[in-house]
Image (cartoon, rainbow, N blue to C red; front, top):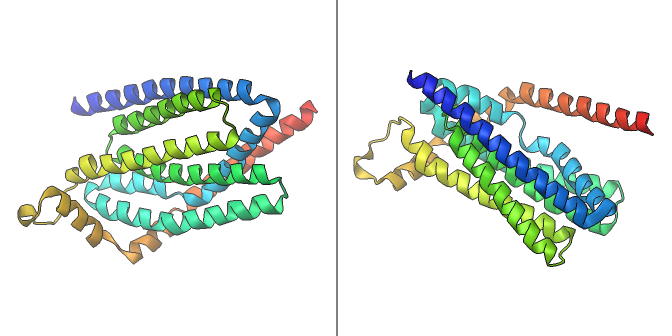
Length: 261
């Protein structure tokens, strides 16, 4: 009965959050389109599209692998979380380098380059948030993911409406996304530190530590270079699936545009 209630709760929470975030996202898109017009909205859409495409390098299937492995055995959560974060950092630097290299090779104006750089930072921050979401999912705590997603959309909606009505442009818009992304990363990590890690059954003797130092000790002990390698290799099938899915849907999109033209 508890399992049924938990499943029902997760489905309800996820569905409700999807409705709320979709509604707020629609409001944001409509407002941006009306405010910036065709040219400005085109720049915004381009920056979102190219950074979303290249952001696949920040997450080579690690999130899916974490969901699978931690859901099987909650005891390994700390070790997997720590090593996944370690893998993320060099991948994020590599991704940002690829974004910079790509946009400069395409020869776009300086203002578009800056917008793409800023949205690239947002996508990198979002990749950490999605990593934390995968941990929430593995522990069947979808209410945390839902809360963070809703908070992000509320921050975006309020700040975008406020700053755009003050006459700010696309650079300010991109910075708003970075602020919202940063808040989500910090909030998600805080939830994991306070709510998820205490659920993990560990081998630590907590009698001589308070709960905060114990969690820090868990992170330190969990660093494992062999696991980093295993995570990276094991995630390859997932990233290949994501990559070909993106190529397929991008092809269909541009093929449809070609038919329209």
